[in-house]
Image (cartoon, rainbow, N blue to C red; front, side, top):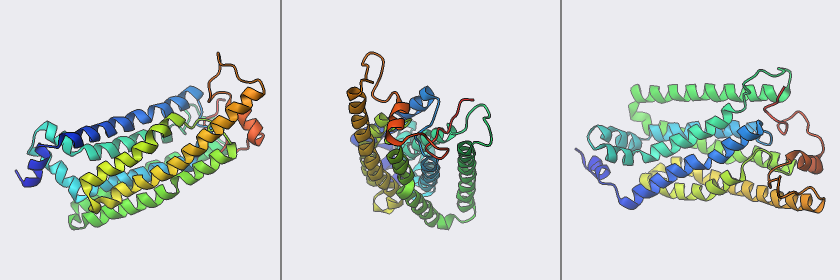
Length: 289
């Protein structure tokens, strides 16, 4: 057993606890968003381009950490150490894998279970986003496997390419969503509780990954540093709109504490803020026929 594997066999208690807490936090943070889309039966207010950029960025991030030599060394140790040591050693990989999986669920929600009118522009956009995401996942997996089995000496260069590509997409990922939320002047199907958990959690996660991978892993944790900053901006905007719109509802007699919540009656809020919706990215991506 090498020195690196021996280190994984006896993980530091505080580091293991923090990493496990982050993993559970990532999983829990997406529950409010998934529930909100399902309960509203609509992804209205969630930009399809935000979903596209987020899914492709997450795919690159997952491929990056799977390709990094440091991560592959951790995975290789699993055949030499205990199950607990292996689990502790690959928590960083598991964190990014769970984050990618949870965001991909949002992308899958853009495709309704029953075929609507195919002439609907928003439906065509939804289908295109899902198709691009699936194609990108398959292509990235293919490149990853080619470098592992044919060009193992260039794995770090491949990992850094994935990381830079993911960071570049993450840098603009929230811009379509910020624009959509600004245009609607309401959160619609976007979940504020999710962002309240994820925004501070992003910076904790960056610290955890940086502690595991060091400066050499900048291409991995840099992605989440960028997304944390932009998500914080979106959260501030969403909270402001909710506070303002709630005050409007109260002043106009719409508020009924017994039957309504602060994120209900989005149709009235959108009508007040911007008039009728058009068939663009602000329209519901899931339409009931």
